[in-house]
Length: 293
Image (cartoon, rainbow, N blue to C red; front, side, top):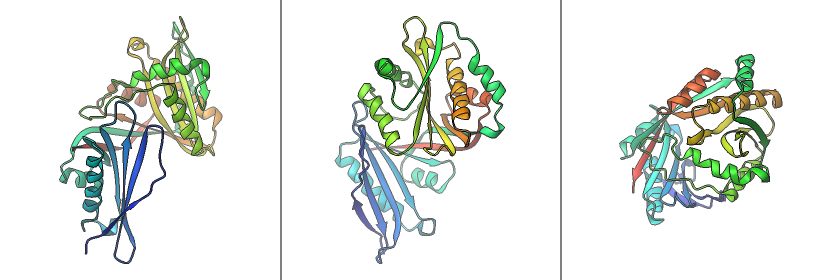
């Protein structure tokens, strides 16, 4: 008997997206799987939807994932989306499921972890303290200070040419409101946002940034959200400088953190090299898939 697919009300609405949800259940009401469809709403990404599907391991290969996918695709098309993206760990059941249903592999990501107890803190400190003529570091917790808000929002274009291979991810358009909304969303869920920025010494503008999100209790693993340098400021090792300082600050301010997580496109050789130099060890790879609608 086919699963019952029930549309749910999902309260996860942000300044840049909203989300739809479905539950797959057996005739007796037993949950079998779920699907979430994120519909991006900001300028530059109105064409895009992102899918996350989960089926209980004991219930796989019974058409449950296919039924959830069909519900999500129908909703995405009804909302005039032209691209649906999804991610799965390489060589996992999700990887094969998406490939078998017409999704294209468009990007491979390497996930890595820095075990803070094993980190070479002396070397990281040395890298963080190296002089970079023409630049200086600053940092803040939570929302960007008002005096840097516009410059920081402008600096987000540093992510525009981030290697995305064939992914039709659009262009994320950042302004001050979006920067502040992102920080607020992190704070509302109880996490801590730490940002290190490199400033151009000539005018004080933001030349690059490195964001790290730490669990609110200061335990477990922190997650790097992004490290990027504006094209006109590249070639000065600012990415390594900022990420080293971010690690040093995390170790000093959150002694109970066990590790830091990062993920990087396999085509982003400079950032992979920085991660390797700072001591991050690859843990697994994931594949980004895309389906044209």
